[in-house]
Image (tube, rainbow over the protein chains, first blue to last red):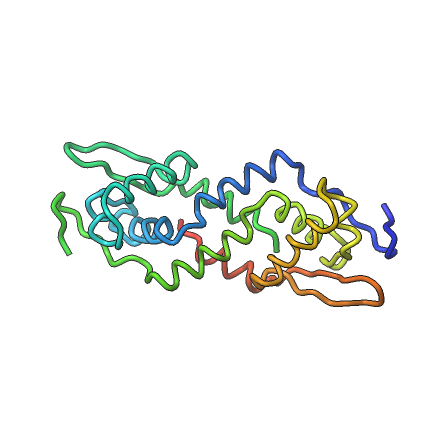
Length: 104
Length: 104
């Protein structure tokens, strides 16, 4: 397809897929969520207990729980209950998918 | 550091750096901006004219210009004027940086 300036360009990414990708990036695009993910990534076995997160970021426990829920719902974290505590680990496949669809 | 549940976890990403990374991800986290980036990525020479974008996404030209401005200000695109038209190309170093700091 030729455009007024003389260049050619392909059709864009489909709208539905663009919205799905934007939702994944929105789940990542928060400073506290990036801090929580960094704690999990750097922890032994790449997993961390909710009590670790609450100690390490400068927000109250209900806010930590809210951000962890957003990350689980986006498919970026897995949640598992062990005794009294909830533990979280990265969904490395989902994160690899994001890395792969980024342009450039 | 040992926490109540018995796990150990490192300190998180610093707040300033977390905010900088979140701002980069927010610039990416929009369906129209992902479509515009896909047009540029798939175009000859990985660059595209503003007229290409306007033809290929389902929003009006001022909205396209707004989204391109957000991407330029975030350092994700370079803008160059050629005659009557503005051309855009990806900042591949900035996109590689995002890919590198994603967890997982």
